[in-house]
Amino acid sequence: NNQQLQWKDSAGAVKDVLWVDSNNDVIYKAVLAKDHIFKDSAGNEIMRITDEGSTGKVGIGETNPDNTLHVYNNDTSVSSPGIMIEQDGTGDAITTYLLTGAQRWVAGIDNSDSNKFKIASTIDLDSDARLTIQASDGAVGIGTTSPSGKLTIADAGGDSSTGLRFTNAGGTLYGSSFLIPVGTGATDGFYVQAQREDAPLYLGTATYPQTA
Image (cartoon, rainbow, N blue to C red; front, side, top):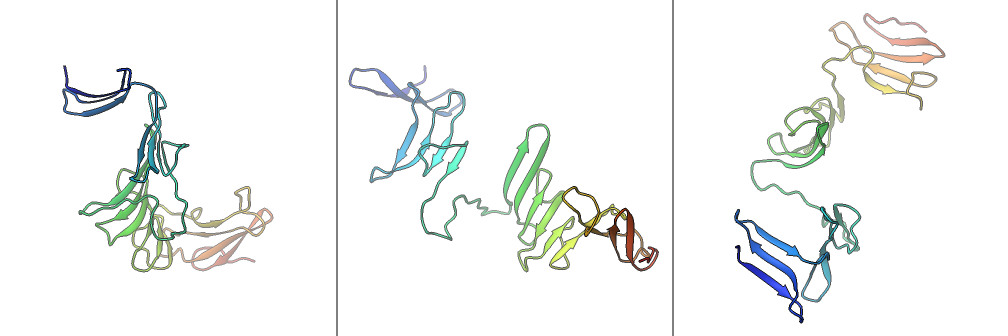
């Protein structure tokens, strides 16, 4: 019994319907399975919503979108964004990536932490940030949100098997591969562990062996 606005062809057949339902939602329905096309004043297509049955695809600047959202530009601009996420309040400018029931990642600008860019493995940027780039100097932190150098790697549960690791294609410490571990105690010191055939080579100080 909701009031409707209908578009009909010359024979009187209904082609499109617009109405407000009992939940006060505005519903637009194409009676025929056709794409919804939006054009500018010059008649150029600027956006299209395709009819994919139970789902649809949106093309902006693209007449045949390949994905749920397909944005296409064909110009010489290097400054105007294809997609912009803007925050004008106190919240974060953020995007979310989710595998249903499995894993969520978020990325964006943390408004409450000096506008740092963060990638986090949870629902927000304030928790479990895995990578941080400081807006002030471009310093990168892995495992820390306050890098003290151009690259800072932190591992709260670090031991002699973690840290900065360089390996061969198979992921093992052989040949020219080496590991700079993260010590767990005040006397652990600094050392570089390389691999010579199947025997480790240590170059370091404090409690670690110093053999050649």
